Amino acid sequence: MPTATDISAASAAAACVVETHRRLVDVLAPGRTLAEIDAFIARTLAELDAPSCFLGYKVRGHPPYPSHACLSVNEVIVHGTHDMSAKPLEEGDIISIDIGVRHRGWIGDAAWTYAIRRATPLGASMMRAGRESLRRGIAAMQPGRPLTDWARAVQQCVEREHGFHLVRGLGGHGYGKSLHTAPYIANTMPGFPGEWPDARTLFKPGMLLAVEPMLAATTTEIESLGSAWPIYTADRSLSVHYEADVLIEESGPLNLTAGLFDLPDVVG
Ligand code: MF3
Ligand code: CO
Image 1 (tube, rainbow, N blue to C red):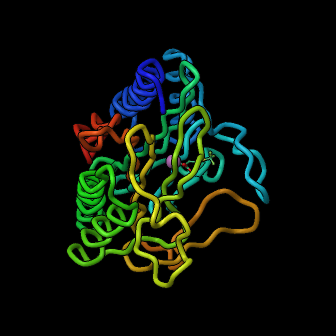
Image 2 (tube, rainbow, N blue to C red; image 1 turned 90 degrees about the vertical axis):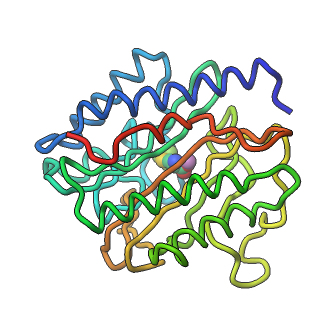
């Protein structure tokens, strides 16, 4: 069980992530390159005393993660890197930015999606669906209820109501003093017993959870190329990603990154 001091440090780490997103809103614009955006994030994190916990992160089969933040444009779902493309952002692009930090010994890890200067009709409706699924999923994270309550709420919103897809095989996670801890938090209901071993785990007070719907326009499948980091939609359709840090309290979920909901969808 985290102590009051732990919770205040975790809240402060989450606040560093939100503040970095806030500052990004004034920087994102047509013409910006991913390298410039990552460099801006690096400077901001240094100023906030909240270094990236993604930079150098090791996952088997991949080189150490090369960027401060994940910058995922259009058909990239997650884990886009600053060096994957030299092409500047263009009007109508969608970029999902995932920022993970360590601050006072605790992790903050949250993502938001922005349209550059204008949103295409598809981009706008996917951003609406993604934000709404995050809001409704979090409301379902009630102590004593199983993790499937989250997945049911998110899936209902994205797939039944909005007609988009949640990509399979990627999900949220516990976090704390390290970026990834149990449980794994799928965004869709298991299709067969054993597909999601943590499905019956209950939300309980003191849990810190990073929950993250990843939507694709027309597929549930993901694809990556060799050992490269970015994960694409298999059919290269548009993708959005929203991630929040949630503390489960006796009284219900507390979104430590709720400030992200105040950010504009369209920037630059
Ligand atoms: N938010 C993502 C996650 O929780 C970001 C990880 S990027 C990595 O898995 F570089 F750290 F892998
Ligand atoms: Co995460």
